[in-house]
Image (cartoon, rainbow, N blue to C red; front, side, top):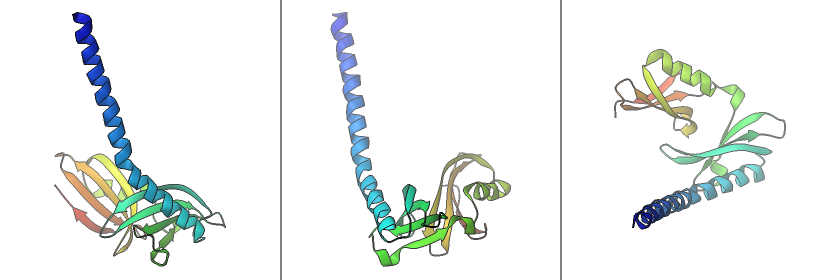
Length: 160
């Protein structure tokens, strides 16, 4: 009897793990496909020669941020709209603005950060921004947008 209970519990736990893995894999599939199309578009439009990373950025308008190097070997970030319209692609050379580390430094100088959750480079109406999501000392969710160009604060959403 004890063996049947152990088998049943083990089976249910294993089944739950397999179902969870399948759901997570399927949920991520549309993003992976969209990122791949954006990477292909960045290369086919000659914006980039090679791609190193990409992710979806959801701001006022959603973009896929694609990182890579151009034919001259300069590091760039390309912002491809979700619609994949080539004429709406924005781009920036990474050397022309502040780094992720510098953006985090700007944040830590002015606020009490308990934990950084995410840092993304994205495109907004003000231009290219670093979006930093973090928890403050009171464990409240905060969003800060720092301009890529000069490291100035653009927008804050605090204590959610």
